[in-house]
Picture 1 (cartoon, rainbow, N blue to C red):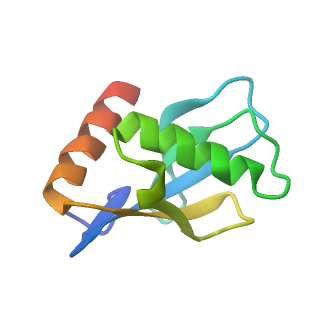
Picture 2: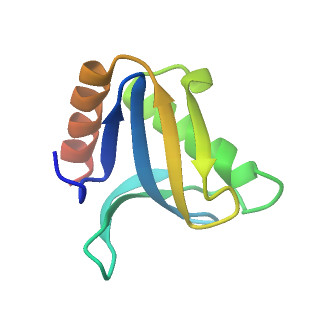
Length: 108
């Protein structure tokens, strides 16, 4: 796995790199975003506004549902008020890798 993937595995789970789009027409995972330095992030669009954590809560709910993981295992670890976020996911790294790859295949 390269540093340019949209996620990194950790000993106790994974870090998912997200580009959030709050206030969208519908909740969806909309593929990959590629930054100027070739960084990759998963585009997550939510209808919730970026107000008092509402968008972050919607992002967590959408990702948990898509990954088949409990919401309690996901948290925003960086970028609480920014579009570019890191979501920490607790769980078995091998299982999370498979779920994240399937997620990307579905959104492509």
